[in-house]
Image 1 (cartoon, rainbow, N blue to C red):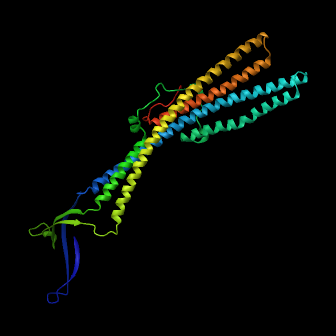
Image 2 (image 1 turned 135 degrees about the vertical axis):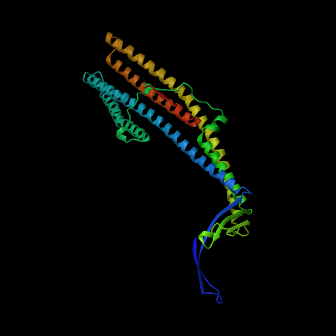
Length: 365
């Protein structure tokens, strides 16, 4: 309803007219998507939604891989600290033995200084190693959404195991799994749809409008005879002059599409390179770990045999001490090789774009 005040005719009645208008009307408007502007716009919006979803998936996978890598790194550093502490203790024992030998005339003063220097060097390497181990625990806590004082307990490195099946994908599967490749593909679809939108904007827009209702000067006559009103029309809107803006927008959309094609190709090549690098690293890690385990096993056996001979009086205590030092050094190498292989396995799963929930590395509980 509306109330209006209008000017009256000079020769009829009062100078002004005051009256009420009662109206009810339904209006419809439909624009024909003849050239696909709306259709391409919907495709572009859908592709942008896919981009956000794939980027979120990539962030989740990256977080999961970083948690595993940080946990393995924390376990390895904790065991390296233990081995380094033992090496420091052995170095001090050896320095004491050399000092005793010097006082008995069986060693030179230079031998004493060398032994003391070795012990001091090992003592100096412990604080940075402990700090590195603590930083690894703090980083793991932050990745898990905790404060550093709530860092989880470090698992022994021996409880970490490689998965039974290491993923090896063919190229077609790789392109369907990696979220960065899928995001680049969605970006390409969005850019293609934008070209369609920019092209459709160059052509006219056809719209159909209609309205149907009833109007009267009294509310009692709103739905009476003769109160019906209606309109119908067809409009054609053709851009005539925009200063070249529409053509420039289309050229920009085409250039953006070409850039998206290049980015997609680069994403695919990076995916293949990441997988190839991860496979090479994992293969070499297996060789290095095998050698480190063999050296560590030989060092342990040598230490055990020297210990047994020492109890029988067949070898001296310094010889037994030196064999334990060799064993601890071999253990350090084995720890580093084991951690590297576990970390590279986690990196391989991430490079393959394995589905969520797939085990990267397993830990015995």
